[in-house]
Image (cartoon, rainbow, N blue to C red):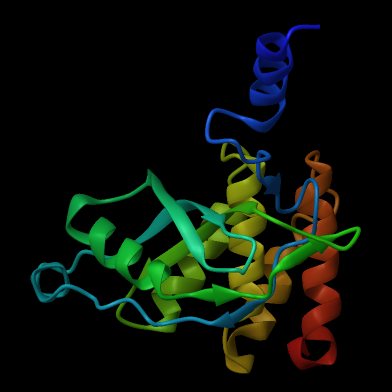
Amino acid sequence: MSAFALLLGLATVLGADGLEPPLVAGRDVSLPEKTSAVAPVYPEIARTAGIEAMIVLRVTLATDGHPTDIKVLRGIPLLDMAAIQAVKEWRYHPTVVEGVPRRVELVEVVPFFSGDGGLASAFSSLVRDRSQPSYLRVAAISRLVGLPKKRHKSVADTLGKVLNDADEAVGTAARAGLAAIGSEAK
């Protein structure tokens, strides 16, 4: 085999940038634990106009756990940059597989709501909407579980409706979410 063929084969396996492709959180590895998260700055023009939304981002983490590549999957122009700026400051525990630090790709949802009631309603609707992609519904479940305890009863109601969802990932996430909030939902 020529050196050129060997290098071409290696470039194909590693990718054009010479790095192994990132692992996908939720498929290849579990979701990396966030160690710090800066709250997004809600642009005043959007707040004044009453614009509330969830910005969905695909984030690639470096081997040390900091975001290196952020792409908007679903957004609103007035809010996209504020979401990206916040996520650039977030940090995660590095993902290590068989002793080797690895890059990870994950989906983050950055909410812009004036209160947690609107946030809970938006995430609940997203979880129940079977036309939405699995990764987005699972991300919404994780955000619901992180809401204040006063919302856990309604979160449990939402999760109970998708326990036996046709999408296995959603059902599994719902069961894990209910286990996480446990007796607090009563």
